Amino acid sequence: MPADSPLTPLTTAIAREASAVAGGADAVAHLEAPRDAGFGDLATNVAMTLAKAAKRNPREIADELVARIQADGDLGALVQSAEVAGPGFINLTLSPKWFADSAKAIVAAGTDYGRAQADPVERILIEFVSANPTGPPHVGHARQAAYGDGVARILEYAGHNVTREYYVNDWGRQMQLFGASVAARYGQLFGLDTQVPEDGYQGDYVIGIAELMRDQVGDTYAGRVNPPDDEVLAEFATRGRDLMLGTMTAELERFRVRFDAFFSETTLHEGGIVERGLEALIASGDAYESEGALWFRTTTYGDEKDRVLRRSDGSTTYLAADVAYHLDKAGRGDDRLLDVLGADHHGYIARLRAVIAAGGFDPDMLEVPIVQLVSLTEGGEAKRMSKRAGTLVTLGELIDDIGVDAARFFLVQRSHETAFDLDLDVARSQSNENPVYYVQYAHARIAGILAQNPEAPADAGAPAELDPSERALLLTLCAWPDVVREAERRRSPHRVAAYLQDLARDFHGFYHRCRVVGEAPEVVAFRLDLLRATRTVIAMGLDLIGVEAPDRM
RNA sequence: GCGCCAGUAGCUCAGUCGGAUAGAGCGUCGGUCUACGAAACCGAAGGUCACAGGUUCGAAUCCUGUCUGGCGCACCA
Image (cartoon, rainbow, N blue to C red; front, side, top):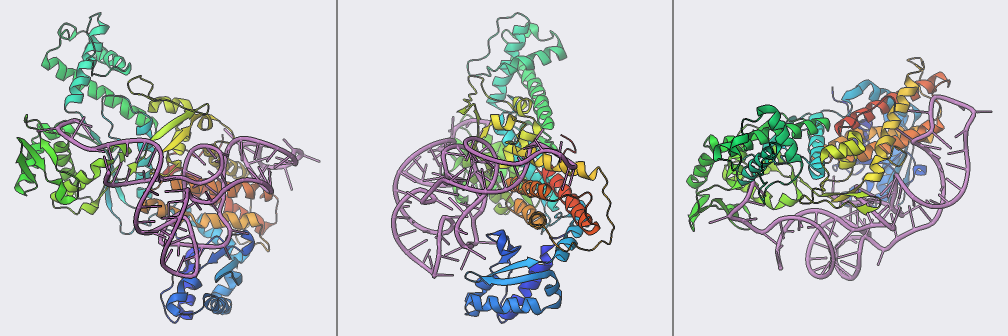
């Protein structure tokens, strides 16, 4: 059973009273942290939002609302004090009983706290990474992987049905060049003077692929690669792809990212699906012949210019395959398609929407989150990365360097819409300057206390007094369902990371001011609930961004 | 030239369905371990929210314009 924030009943009750004050106008009471903790536990500006509709002074509305809150039996018991401040804010201080009840409720909800809030529930297909199988995944792919998988986890947590898919660009000129490059490296393993094509793949990893291939087939092709014939090239391309995809998925799995499906571009060509897609576009009038080529009239759907589908030499473009692929995806019965693309592909969005629209689907079913670039900093200086020079940092190297937990945390820490610098020195450090350990440490500390099995009576009642740090911690716990909802709605895993830092900070503050073991029974009972609730929320939050929650560090 | 993303503290960035004195981490300075883990806590300094107009009782947030940076504008993928 999905569990709401303990604040929800309060919010609706206050909205109800506010509406009554404003003569029945619709009221949404937004409860949020006040500017200063000294003002109370929560603040609401509901009186100000109603001022216009009710044509009354906001302070007047606020005064009346406060009187009604104090007069109401149920609300009065939960609210210790309510006062009007500033232009019409109402500051609320809640009773210890409310805090104790709320902590209990969160503990009772367990891992259902904040879960399954999606409305409506959708079937969602998310495609991400989709790196060409001609080289190892690099840091940019790592960010897309951390983002895409984080979004997928959050969507699942929210209750959606999610499928993760990887589109494999295993067709065309790049694959041929890759095959030729592997063939050359393979030949070199047998002492042949075979050269990687000038515009081919020069990276050393191709040697590794060639070695793996030699392990598989021995010297079978040794006599046929100098120079290679078409059949041999095709064989090397196919095998090279499979091997590269193998290391790709192994690296991603190490990064805790798994896909439900890999969709091969080649199957679209060989199955005649690309041709069928083009025919459909011609039939619907969305494609036309001009200058010897076949064009997709994407301008109809808001693109800047029309795009070529089949070149004048008869070969099809990348877009032609993507037409087939997206028509296929749109027709599978999903409610929503997410294509996570890198910033260098954002010009492609209009084309993709055109495909969806031309296929007769609602173009709004397609969402294309763009992940901005990530660069690395080390020793205070930008780490230069070049594909040509082979100084590209791979996902595997990043993991070996800073670890999966730090890599995933850092890569989703910032909004995907912002280009950012990842400071390797900070990410590497196992000290207080590393936010991922800061959060994990809070989890481990709680586990340490709970391992002592402190005991408390079940019906202890609420403490008479609360420490400010107890109030702050519980109120932050109350925000969890909102954080998840925002992260889901806006496809923003970074909100989860930021929240975890807030929560860990509140916990560490609480830890330093409040002991658990050896206090009065009702105090132990309340604080144990706080610990359990915090541990659960931290563990769930970390899981949503693919980071582990250790009991010991 | 056109389009997308951005410009907020020394650095890296949150905050942008308009709300009180704009936040965090790191860095800097100063404190705190004979009690559940100091990978921690407490305090201090640090800002013309790129700039200029506009809307509003109220703007980092909305509108217009300008400047700066990244990325993209293929019969490449």
